[in-house]
Amino acid sequence: MAGCLQVITTIDTREHADAIALKLLQKQLAACVQIEGPISSSYRWNDEIKNSTWWRCIIKTTAEKYDEVERTIRSFHPYEEPEIIGFPIAAGSFTYLKWIEDSVK
Image (cartoon, one colour):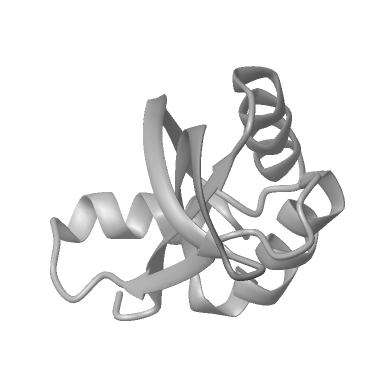
């Protein structure tokens, strides 16, 4: 089960977050997408300090599906360079990790 990932992205509206979640689930690229927000983010972009409100999507998928997950997020995302970060799941319940893998086949 070492091939499971948690992918994080942030997006500007709840509606966009819901659209990403639905598309990933419909395409069987994710077993689950949790949406949190709104969250506040302070960051540097184009030599300016910015503050924005975002919605965070936490996507449960596999390493094998990462590239397609990233492409799908980018197809919905309004920003030039969206946050898309994948973290390997180092440990977890065997049955939960198996559910992730079975859900994205």
